[in-house]
Image 1 (cartoon, rainbow, N blue to C red):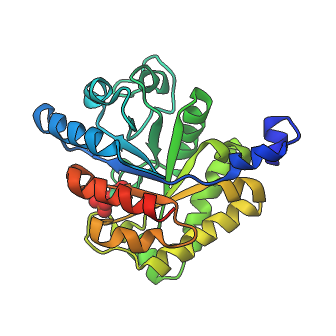
Image 2: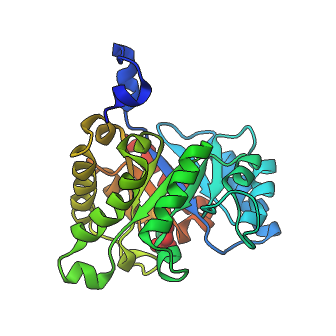
Image 3: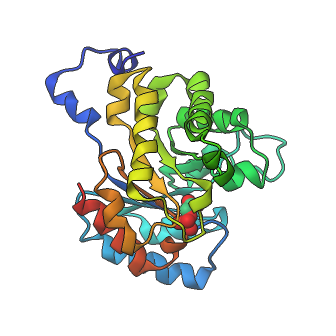
Length: 272
Ligand code: PGA
């Protein structure tokens, strides 16, 4: 399906803007934080975000802190989101948080299929695709994480793995849903290890992701934001963001330190 088919209209010239890729840097706090330290972090991020240009800044926080994030960030140049979403609606699903609940707390984004969800919580490609589908239908923007383990990289099956993770989602929702989504390429061996992918290594997989989507729809692929994640820091961000198919970052550890996180955001804005 083409973007034209998706929107149901012939695209006018100005709609080329629709497929211009904006930069995005999203923080993934994981299971970190407490009310007092969050308050300082959110206030510092809010203040520094006023001067950001050419990049959208987001923080994905633990569920109990969504209300606090909403209180502090409302009206600021920072948006926020969740780190996971239930594949179900409301009902008898103990412990699950629905897309409607995330929306009620002002979330724009939700991370889906993070490697920690896949490996520690046993989420299959099918579950991740169901969560992605629910997020899209609710009007949230899913940040779909894909990436290979060290073993898979060493076996030379990175593209097979990433392609399979992507296909599960495209098979469920159709490629046009990616117009309203973000992909994050996060090699599992680079997450929280201090071992970042070399910019060229990351670029190669980003280019593969874009080409895999382009095989379905070139316009959707062109407009798709593909973030890199895995030990991004202020010191290595600028280099990563010079790569042609890297449109920003998904930041774990460094998103817990306001100065580091905002330096990464600024680097993404400059790389625009
Ligand atoms: P890291 O985490 O930046 O701490 O490596 C990235 C992520 O898991 O999203």
